[in-house]
Image 1 (cartoon, rainbow, N blue to C red):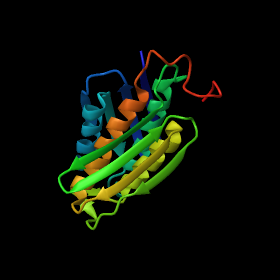
Image 2: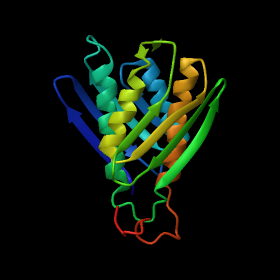
Image 3: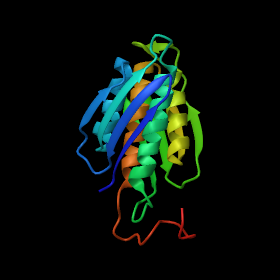
Image 4: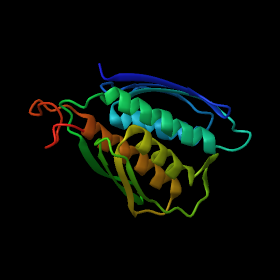
Length: 194
């Protein structure tokens, strides 16, 4: 079973995440930020992950700690769930359209974190979610998961559409990368180790 449960408690956040890579896309999300819940629900649905996220954060300050720390814990859950990555495709990419937005996401579960982010939005908020926090989320996730992650906006005007396309493209790319292939013996690397 490629599942993980990870908890993290600090003075700023208390987070518990359960992730099943081989699920059906079922989600139970409560971060206290409605738009962020919407994005994580879409991630689960389109990645075919079963995902439970419970976050109590210092939203009286702002959403930064809640969003960034959720990225850290979700990244740890991905790293734990993929384990040694035996039989896993490792790479995934997807270009996702969402009305005016078109976003590319590529991922490599190589164990070496790297992050490139190129999204530009004129709106500062989607509901109570500050649009600049999407970068913090994906950055934290990529480094705690040990993945190479690139997210690039090819077109788009509406911030809601751009962000939704980014989260769903990430879901599709990670679903592809974490998929098992019977042709792969051990890990997909000429080094025989990731």
